Length: 278
Ligand code: HEM
Ligand code: HEM
Image (tube, rainbow, N blue to C red; front, side, top):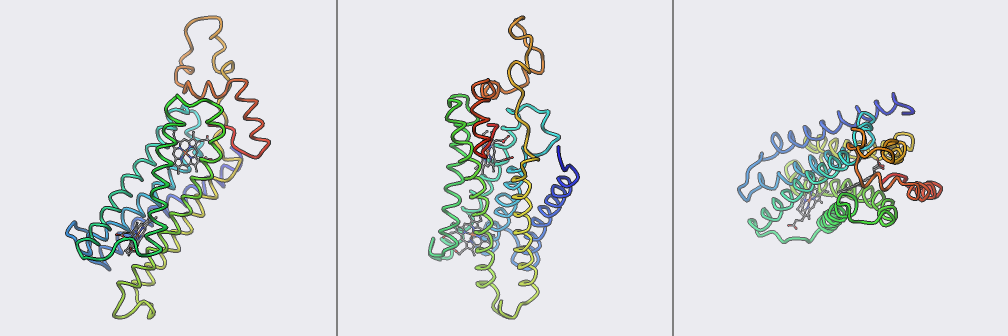
């Protein structure tokens, strides 16, 4: 891998920052706010930022860069797809609970639903994220989609994933601002009390974390190398019936994807500045 030291720096920084985000949001709700509970009150609302920042910002960020970890390049692509999909699924489950928490809190307190720009943008992001998850599982995980369709959808998948992640960061910032305006009364937000300084810092850290993730995932030199071709992987395949152990570890759909025809098509995609592995 080129620039391994620089990669390591960005990876360690993003991991440290990711854990810091979770600690910051926990300190916010446990120290400055009413803690965590499922009682229809403010403590129930607090699950909303905690689960969103843990699931949608931190775990989702790691899901996005998981293919970039060079230590995983010797693992089969299929295993990595399961890990990538599993992390997105974990994020999705936390986000669903975060949504239930805020809607339940609003209903218990007779606060209208879906009036703010934050709620509109947030819900659109959540719906598109769930759509991306389902479509990606069908297209990239279940081996029923033709190679040409996978190849055509990969750039859309990556662009959509990054756009959604940008949407997550934006929605989180809007939500944080809103909550500070609503909850800081004496002294008000405009007086910049300690809670405001602390939570504004959390917002800045979210932006920096998102920036690090986007940097890591957009470096061409840190991309998982394409799988070897069928022939490279299994020189014995045409002569003997039994494949060597390495062959059986790989994802058949990837073997198919890396056939000569797919490789040529991938090269064309590369020339267009797009992805070469699916
Ligand atoms: C409400 C989504 C992050 C604070 C909502 C609602 C949605 C939503 C859909 C509407 C609930 C309803 O109308 O009953 C999201 C998404 C987020 C996110 C997708 C992240 C990507 C945050 C964060 C905070 C926050 C980090 C910080 C505390 C709020 C507040 C409300 C709310 C105060 C109630 C007021 C309103 O409806 O706008 N959120 N949220 N949100 N969220 Fe978030
Ligand atoms: C790559 C986002 C779900 C399969 C990527 C990349 C992003 C992304 C940003 C680029 C990674 C890189 O260049 O290193 C998302 C989002 C998802 C999601 C936001 C959920 C909402 C899935 C699922 C699968 C999948 C369920 C099914 C296995 C892939 C594959 C790649 C990829 C095969 C190509 C990896 C490579 O270039 O080697 N995804 N993804 N994704 N994703 Fe997803």
